[in-house]
Amino acid sequence: MGRFEIGSDAFLLDSAPFRVISGALHYFRVHPAHWRDRIRLARAMGLNTIETYVPWNEHEPRPGVYVTDDPTLDLARFLEIVAEEGMFAIVRPGPYICAEWDGGGLPGWLLADPDVRMRSTDARFLEPAKRYLNHVLGIVAPLQVDDGGPVILVQVENEYGAYGSDKEYLRELTGATRASGITVPLITVDQPSGSMIADGSLPELHKTASFGSHTAHRLAHLRREQPTGPLMCGEFWCGWFDHWGAHHHTTSAAASAAELDALLAAGASVNIYMVHGGTNFGFTNGANDKGVYQPITTSYDYDAPIDEAGEPTEKFWAFREVIAKYAPVPEFEQVAGSPAPSVEVPLEPVVGLLDAAASVGSWEPHSTLPTMEDLGVYRGLVGYRAALPNHSPAVLTFGEVRDRAIVVVDGVRVGVLARERHEQALVVPGGHELLVIVEDEGRVDYGPRIGERKGLIGPAMVDGVQLDRWETLQLDADALAHTAGAAASGRIVSRGAGHSDLSLPGFHRAVFELGASADLFLDTSGWGKGAAWVNGFPLGRYWSAGPQRTLYVPAGATRTGENELVVLELDAMSSRTARFVPSPQLGHTEE
Image (cartoon, rainbow, N blue to C red; front, side):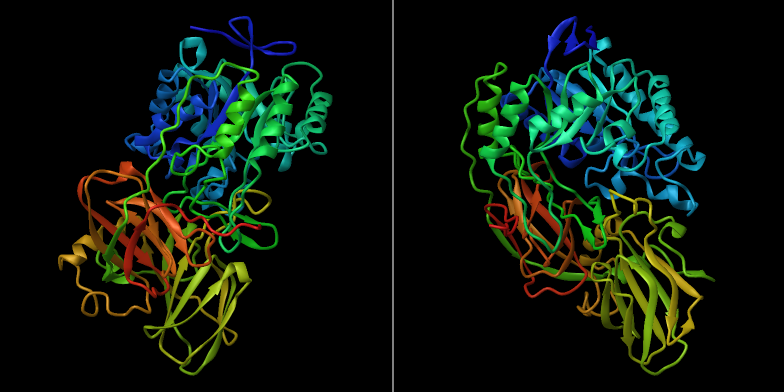
């Protein structure tokens, strides 16, 4: 049992001053087999607290349907391990989390009504949000420090001052949080710029700031907004995330360590974002859109002190040295990591994406062009098809493509429309059937485009003639990846022998041997665009656009003996070989 409080100038643990030295580590970005290892490394760096977001869209993928049996989402177990390793915890349940996560954690099913106002008192948003908070905070409440657990702080909303200033909305969330059994202090996190801190909080919520530089100036701004109470950098940005098609971000270990030193020298508490970034497994990455749509890469390495594969970096040792000046740091001797196993095996095409989908589902008719949300599809891919009104070359246009459309006429691929290039029109040849395979490349997680719909946005026109009659086919890639093994054994028959039409999206498969479970790095160079799975575990997306050239395979997803790799290629492969290489390749930097 303990008591955690806000003092006049410090946090208080059982009435004694306590400095929070925390690091962000998202359980949903780390294979559960590696939770304890990453937490132990964070403690070895000198941290006394672990912070995590909670993604609403993962915990409630369908309205009222909460995930209870997925070990990758076992928040209670994660917090228990934090406690077992002698650390405290900060929980940030949202409902909005940003986090460069798909939709900032907001479920796509909220968009069943296209007029819903996100992050507001609109009952169509607020009532589901309060039900979610009641559910997830019901998991957290028994693990508060008051009851002998690790949780010392809980956040209300997230960087709300960068989005709005609706105090009634914040009061509703605060009330829902307290009603869910949370008794520890409540905090907000906002950027110390303009009115963001004031807009994003309430008098009864302890304000913290988010920044990565100019520490003295940022803390002074925070103190003006909050004259008493402990100073805290709720997100100390020690790295950054990457976008597909751009460069890999790195920051100076020495410069970051100097800013951390300045924070701790000022007596402030800190939450390092991120201490370990992890991975956007599967189709969970978010995106930004400030005039140009930029989906976020699978790797969320973040140039953090503990890298994506769980290895201490130069920043780890620099931060540990700084922390040791202000707090006890445990003994720790680094064991040199060994290269990951190198494996090379042929990758065989086994079944087309559409063939696999048609074996478990059917085309459904529509009298208007539906969005993915209209279909109850909130992530991944969807197939659309329609009859062409004439049989001569024509211009095909859409109101908008969200986010990438592979266009096929009479079974022949004719081009791609890409949102990041603002493409809406394509000349198509004469034919009878139009097929469009649409990929949601990640929901926007920050700014005014949060809550936008996915898929094909109408009107759809062919030389000025509107196409209204459509059929759609759900393309659940995670589920269909499991059919690759069935296809390889002949239980699913492709239109051709195996997967012969390599111009259309299709699954490929390889089997490889390991002497023992191990971290791996799957080399995706020579491949176009798609996703991969090992033993059914979703590794995430790859793309020749870069910067990253490898996908991290956590040891917890592998096994001794035979392992299966499944790859969904949406474009084309110049090399049909699966190579696992000794180390990660996250791409070029600006230097």
